[in-house]
Each structure stands twice: as C-alpha cells, then as structure tokens.
Image (tube, rainbow, N blue to C red; front, side, top):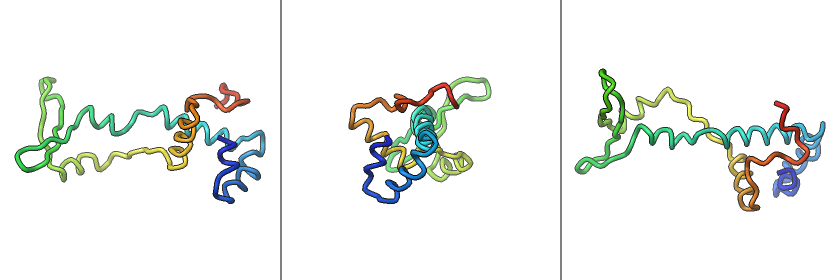
Length: 127
C-alpha cells in the first residue's frame, strides 16, 4: 500500500506519504490499513438488505417484497411501494468504504494480494 501511495499520480498524496504517512514508524499508513481491513470485514449492506427484501414485478409495476414474521412468529411477506420502502429505511445509516479504500482493495487484488494480509512489519496485536 505504501509503495502504491508513494508512486500515486497525485503529487499531494506523494507528499503526504513522505511527510506524514511514513512518519512515526508509518503510523498513519497503519491507521489507514486498519480502516481498510475493518471495512473489508463488515457485511455487505446490499447483501443484508437482500436477506429481507426483493424487487419483484407485479403486473406492470415494481414492488418491494418484504419478508418478515407475523404476530404469531410465522413467516409472511408484504409488498411495499418504492416510496414506502424508502420511508422504512430512511433512518438507517449506510456505511460504505471510501473511494480510497476501494481503490486500495482493487490495487491489492490486481497484485494478487489478500486484503486481509497485514502490512509487513506491522504489529497485528496493537489496536
């Protein structure tokens, strides 16, 4: 990761790596790496929604199928309009990895590296 950032096309990123990222034993780069690993270990929010909801076609319209338990704890479903679905999920906060995290994940995949592998020399026991 450090090498990819050192040779980044943006000179400001290169400067940050030299002046801040590599300072104090690469402390800031290790912090970034930890956030990337944390994001990679989170469940995919779309997969989580797909466990309960599905988009289906009803005649010439689209509806959201909502699977849930009824009052007697039996599996059932209801059909929601798109507006109802948006209202139902309006208070949920969706955490998504930053663009930089996704770029780094992509870089590592293209190099055949596992996203979960630690930074060489990093102490994985530190939080």
